[in-house]
Image 1 (cartoon, rainbow, N blue to C red):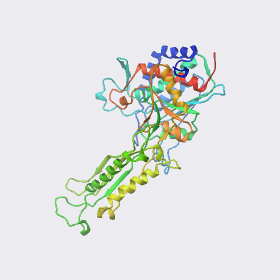
Image 2: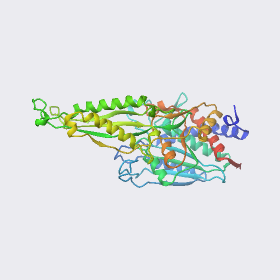
Image 3: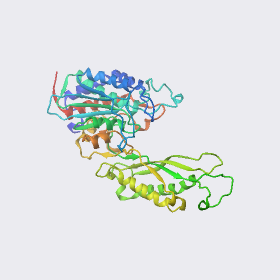
Image 4: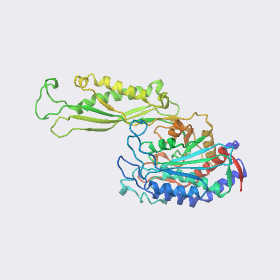
Length: 443
């Protein structure tokens, strides 16, 4: 094993041991974060305890001497295609901080999202989702895996280095943001606020793998127009004034979606070494007004996932959107009604994918730090989107996701993370910091 894949010195061995010795403190920290209700928002939801959680982290960072910045971004404006319209951050502040190094070293961003998906149905949990509990070496609670455990591991690593008197040459940049689970608006606001570093780690539950790429996504809405009429009466053709069943016209749209999906799965320009091919499917359908009335409209929502290579020079997925709309419209227009009453499209915010070159040193940094504490990981991708993409693409901060826990436990009833993962991840982050930022000395 080379030096970069094992504790390179007695100094690093001391750091790993100190992180492990603080296991109880790390568990308490994770439990505290789980205890804040930061359930991801639906449009119009009031704030929950996002501000209290950020204040809690802010106080701990300030105790280390960090310069902190806690702020509520301005509401999103209409016309910004990368975030939802008119989204406010009242009661949902973002937190950035900087632990200044002595100079001459590289800076490293430590990032995590504080929102967690709904814990309903709460009755199905074995223990209260906002009251962390350890059973058989697993720490249970909403966000334990995705991703308050990762945030706690990062913070514990920084606190351990401070306690040991380790002075880094490069800066540690901290950023905990909201809204990863819903829109990506939190990390987008942080980048616009100026958060950046030479490279970054995002504490998603990768199981010590490194996610260097992710797909992007968009959820277009399609409205299919119909014409109401009594369903129990025989009517003339629509061209003679008869009704039109909007729901039945959905079959044409579905046929087009299936064709696109099958095409993308095998098309050479839609393949990626670390990601699945792009995908498209219907996720929501609504239609009809009354049980004996021809439905006047049918509204559907699609989930469209696309690859980093499809991003255009303007940093958007417009080429993908154009292809989807063109191909679906072409099939729909074969119907005489839809030819005269075209589908109506609404394209909401574009959650843009990203990738870090697979030879970038931040990838080996994370994998070697994991190996040094006995955890084997690989470079791979994440088919879903995560905040690392925003920092990579929009802050000139090559950022990979790297964290504790199994993604398959995220968003589940009885979500959990192994305590051993928390400790090993925290130790790996501490090693990554000293190796990336450089050590000026110890007090």
